[in-house]
Length: 412
Image 1 (cartoon, rainbow, N blue to C red):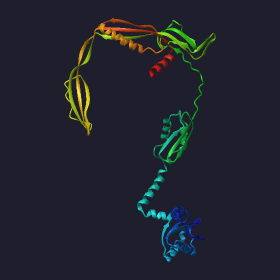
Image 2: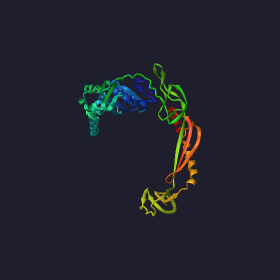
Image 3: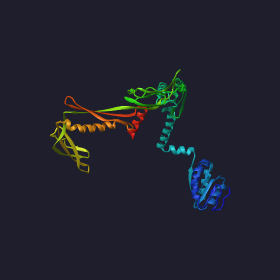
């Protein structure tokens, strides 16, 4: 092997600015090529390398730096290299690689040796156990049925692999109703069950048409059937649920199914009833108050509950101070008493009429057309004033439209 002058390199010979980086690079590459690495400190690297070549030592991965150089040799040449370096007074450091060296280093440290042995035994033991399972591919077949089959065959969360009969599990899973094929295999420490299901029976596509029905009781004023056969005419009285348009076309020889579509208008009367008894018992405030302060330390109340002089009251709470974990609250209790209030029917009737009319109009759909103004009927019976409000409007009464209108009014 020829050596070049300092500052140049070829293949296994490095020097110059990047030499020290090369020394560390040889650590990983030299392990697989040579068994022993020498790092020599000397100002005559070329001379020492030539002396080693003269005595028949095969050198590899030579790297030269200012004041030191390193190389790899076979294990059989270690004694020759050491003898030559000692002979010429060179200071060196030897690093041995290989399985024997690794084992010797491991067993020289008892804790590391025990940990390595436990790790190896753990891998060998735990690799023979099944820790869980998964079921895939089932859409119609219930997973609980498959899990029951696995449980019967001894599949648990921690079971020895040799105790599992994969063929029996595959046969039992395939026997489940709706399963056409089952695949059972072990992947690592998990049991994977994959299912292919039978195709469901094909259902013929038969159109199912629904009729147009009445959403409320009304008197029909107009009907426009876009599709289907009308079952009512203008002037007919209908109740909620009556068929307005049938989902069929009528012929002399029979009927043919068809979607029922159209508009049906009718007069609908809305009713609202308001009651006002002659007297009512109401709870009123008397003006009497009782105040008390409550202290809490870090959210825990200090002291007991106060004795209140009132049985019926309103409670009002205000924070007076809050800081450093201390909270001071002032509670005010306002007394209430029951009082009998007598009502004047003649004086309060207009107010009840206005409130009842406003509530009645809220129940009418937005598309309704007024036919008759709101009319009221009053009567007194057993010291109770009854006010009944009636409001007649013309609106669409076909159920699909009414349902859509309600959703529009509800969600704006």
